Amino acid sequence: MIRELHEKLISGEITSTQLVEQYFAVISQKNKDINAYLTLTKELALEQAKKVDEKISRGEEIGILEGIPGAIKDNICIENVRTTAGSKILDNYTAPYDATVIKKLKEAGAIILGKTNLDEFAMGSSTENSAYGATKNPRDPERVAGGSSGGSASVVASDMAVWSLGSDTGGSIRQPASFCGIVGLKPTYGRVSRYGLIAMASSLDQIGPMAKSVEDTAIILSIISEKDKLDATSTPSVNKKYEDYLTGEIKNLKIGIVKEYLAGLNEDVKKIINGVIEKYKKLGAQIVEIELPNAKYALPTYYIIQPCETSSNLARFDGIKYGMRADDKKNSDYNPDGLPKNLLENYLDTRAYELGAEVKRRIMLGTYALSSGYYDAYYLRAQKVRTLIKQDFQKAFSKVDLILTPTTPSTAFKLGEKTQDPLQMYLEDIFTITANIAGVPAISVPGGEIKNNGKNLPIGFQLLGKWFDEETLLNTAYTFEVN
Amino acid sequence: MINKGEVQHIANLARIGMKEKEIEKFSHDLSSILDFIEKLKEVDITDVEPTAHITGLQNKSREDKIEKFENIEGIKKLFPEEKSGYNKVKSVL
Image (cartoon, rainbow over all chains, first blue to last red; front, side):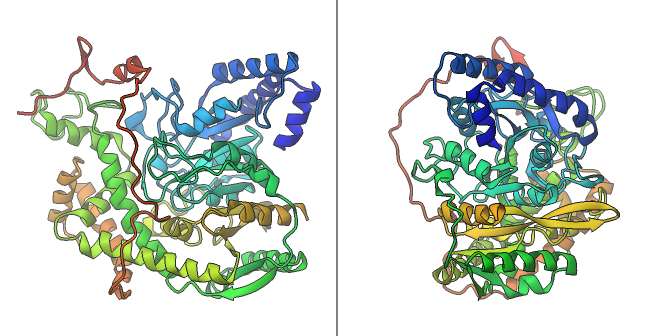
């Protein structure tokens, strides 16, 4: 889609300003029902579009993403734009700087339409944990868009943006992509700079692109991936143009499948995944059964590592330097009436009132697991199991080039269906979470649709690639898509 | 099982004010999540090294050079309470 629009911009069939106006027209029509955007940046978008149009009219060459409108998950900072991370504690926060990915997108001339909804601090699988209300699935408004990047998936699926950025800590790009019928890529850990991404679990977080086609995600990845001195975990640059690796040719490629993963699926999903496998066979790939014996521990490993890192990262939201601070006069639950609060009471009040239930739950869990005497039993043990999971992948990748799994156990569930039981919600990420634990790149690609009460609900399949081998991953996804 | 006293203690460590009803709910929620995590105890981790950074990147160093941050006003504007250009905080003692 990006390439077509790019050609239309060059030929003068449409201007970037017109394109931006068109998207804002769709937004004003759909957003109030879908609730995908939290903040619109129309002024910034039009200003960016004008620059691109002037460049085109001067006959200058423009980049592939230049003048093409997208959306940014609201946990990624854009200078002078409100950035809430879906939390009340950042309700009044205007980012004073650009995240590295934003800086790179701006340099590439990409247009930013606004900031998209998410579960508070990206903790959740449905956007129902957002302090600003849930995002609806564009296919069925009674269902969730998935999460945590539900807003970013929804805007692409409902034509309120051409592309978007999400972040993925345990499946937050891939699961909503599956639910909304779009493509979502989580790059290798370290491929994309996290500077300016509001930190959740630093050893797992990764920013990635979401779009309608594999090629679009490849184009965006080429722009945002680079070594960054502001993120010490970012890896050396490769300056690859990932879109140039999309040959549509995968003969003799070895794709691994995990037997136990397929055994537990419901019939509808199993049918779709088997269909995907058959198609890959026809395209010339070799399907190989592999084992990931420790993958069953990925979810409990995640629910130690993630809350521990979260409890530490979110300690900064204390009402001292920025964000909401509890009022001295109001909310005086933890000190006697009428007396000015001291520092501790102010912390207690600020975090009690401005953080949501799920965020508190994970901070509490992490604080418990890291508290005196428990470190070895929880965090250290989880880090060791993480090593075993990584070794499983190393072994698997000595036999195969990629691994194919479902993205999600089912299609989008109904709003409210899983909010009562946190563990039920956590199980949503069963297939996606291993990629974050192992740090490998993974992509969700639309695999088919399942009819439910007269509605066609999309579902994705997932490919996991070798560390830093996004080109094979993208090309394999692309080959499925174009055939 | 994690009792209400422990929940209160953790809440204090995490600097989250918590009322009786919430403490009860968290005692239940945290216990069920911890039960789920217990599964890791069955894994043999003898002689396994922990993984902190997944791609094995080694420490990177750079020149310790001061760079000017342009938007200082943008940061100052975020102070919840300001006095004469300073961030005003509650008294510690």
